[in-house]
View (cartoon, helix red, strand yellow):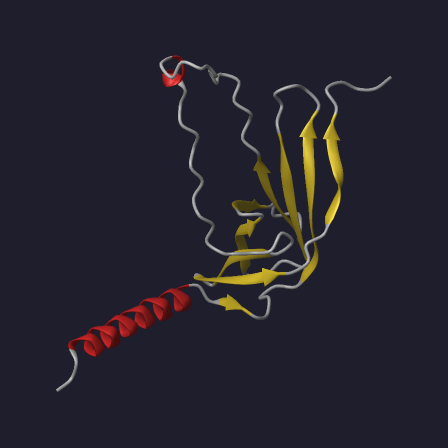
Length: 166
């Protein structure tokens, strides 16, 4: 007679395998890029005025126009929308870091801290990537796909001064 424990273990293992195979097949990453990439890099930026913010910009320069439209980039744990002008061959993604909160009340009395708002919870990134890796979402003839860019270099920090130097 078959043991009830072995039956339940077998069913449990089968359910786990089925669940993981469905997750793996939902996001296929192409091994070859569908468009010729000329240059890729990112650049951090800082505003020249207090409270102006900071962040980074991701640049993806393509070789020529094609029927492939780059839509999003997953980079540094963020989903960044890519945009470009039709006359240019560079897609640009822009991410601004959230500002530091100035309205926090710090006190020994918990009643005084009650008015503090909870911090926003970030969504878990769709892809687990290294710090210099990037996944790009694209559309080609109505069909969506993804490809990976490795070793995205960082260019020198771009500071935006608050006024012109004399």
